Image 1: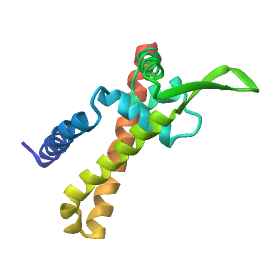
Image 2: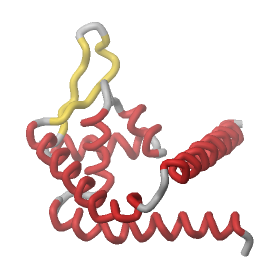
Image 3: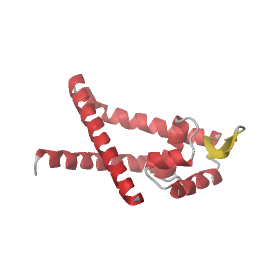
Length: 156
């Protein structure tokens, strides 16, 4: 296996371990909520005028799939929909008080996970972080470009 393959496998392994370690605590503290629902709450809490289209694009899902998630969140009283007076066509979402509580719990869990992993980042120099961030940015751009190509091929 060459270094590029080792890196990709290492990133995949790293991601899977983070998900594994975080999953049980998340599921315990946020009982009754799926990961997709909690991350939808997070997106709505952090973004201005979120709608189904923006959510679907962010999570790489269809609008139909995202619509099902938002309907479930509305039925659970976590988010509510609204329209602007000057645009009755578009439907936006905002957190209810219950949704804000879930958002806050989720943010606190992320802080806890960061504290758990901070020991690794304390050993990394600023220069090393810059190199890694540059790599992640380049790789993300490459994957975005590839996704656009695939999307064009699907629509053709």
